[in-house]
Length: 143
Image (tube, rainbow, N blue to C red):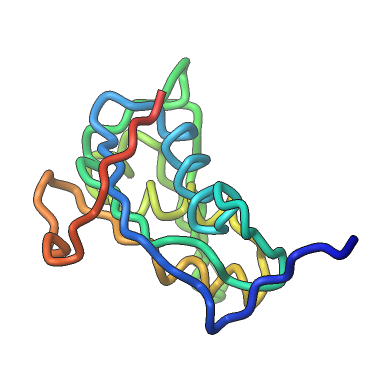
């Protein structure tokens, strides 16, 4: 018996909305990454981008457990001497909530060309409004 291998031409993509209000950041990111990869489908094929489009709303209301608000650090470097910039999760949540959620999801995707292709199907918004209503996205619950 042979395994089923999906082809690029036969992929059907759906749109899903994840409401991050009062949800834990890691759980939201894990669910989004799982669906971006397409692992929730019976036709999952590892070498094909068969995942769906994911919209995450209310990124500014996401929750971090424990002492992560003060202890967790986000690092950026400009590649110039002395160009290291360090921010705490509290600063990221207040000033850059979209980037915080995007980084969490991106870290859970493969770090390859395929992962970059999957990442392009992620749309994160700080508020509860999004411009993708025409696609009729289905709502997903994160526990």
